[in-house]
Image (cartoon, rainbow, N blue to C red; front, side):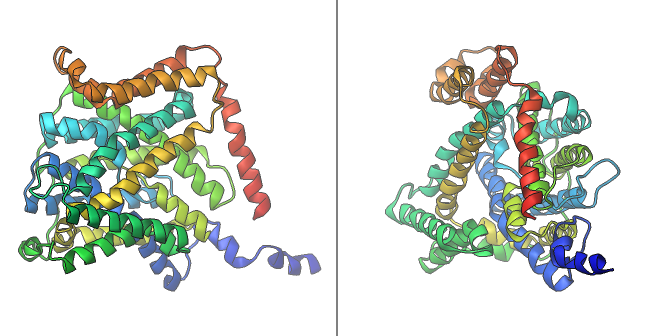
Length: 461
């Protein structure tokens, strides 16, 4: 009787609820937490469609539409993860959205074939990722930390010039690299760094959003913002599917599929981080498999609704670890809010009116953080001579080929397009070398640190 009375005192009820993905906190707490998740991912979700809109020469109206569908699809994709459909969905607090990881491949493909080819390739890649999730346990060993780390690092490096071009005002702008544009981008960069370093809790997690908002307000004061697009946008509109159509090119399919597999591994890492950091346990096979399959379903759905592939957002994993609230219903609320936001084009108009320099100032941080994340992943493996050789060859191809475009131009057919990005040949080289070079660590050994972290989390809880 005494032991029973003491049991609740040993495990506080609030912490027990927080560690249970199926628990529902009071609405007064759940709704603000859901809003916080949306604010943490908002900037990252709307930036890729803005960038690709510039590549395809989209009008302001088209840019608003691309932002609208990005929000709408992210909400639907989030609900697929949190609520689930049969074996699809991790049923964990996972926020989905468009990813910068696809841009190094999507941008050259969109510039050559058009957005329809990117969407067609994404549709196929999504179906293939569903297969990846279904057979995850059998092929997971293909993607070691050295392989995924190299790819993530190169994604960040490839996008860095994009961020700087935007910071200067955007390629082709009459005032490109003007002191006003560069000063505005620097202001956003400084605000983001200060808030990230000295902010606490939600403010720290939303440092990118704070930087963008501050830069946007300063741009308004300086008279750099034209709100004509907001006035012309409709108050309410349902996103139209297949607005740009679908085209299927083998080159585009190969490139998007390869990146999809790598980003799928990031999803696996995010799911593991949620269960270890939030629930104090390892991720279940069903959660990992369902989460990756949901990524694939969401990506194919996104292609139909004219936007880039969707994947799990790492910044929201950090929020879960910070708050300790691992309830999937909190994120479900956030997903519903995203859907609502995607139904109001005027919101997309407000985002589209943001000067490129503001976006560039935040991009310097965001793209650099992607590269930093790649370095962190590489640190998980032993940097012996074998790993250093894989890194050396892959990085040389990934950075060198885009710098020497004449090599890609000599390739027959569309093979040159895959070489021009640098990321695809680098990823293929890393996969091949990691598979054939002797001395590869066993997959079981790579999982031991995860188990140790899980045990530590349970002990701390």
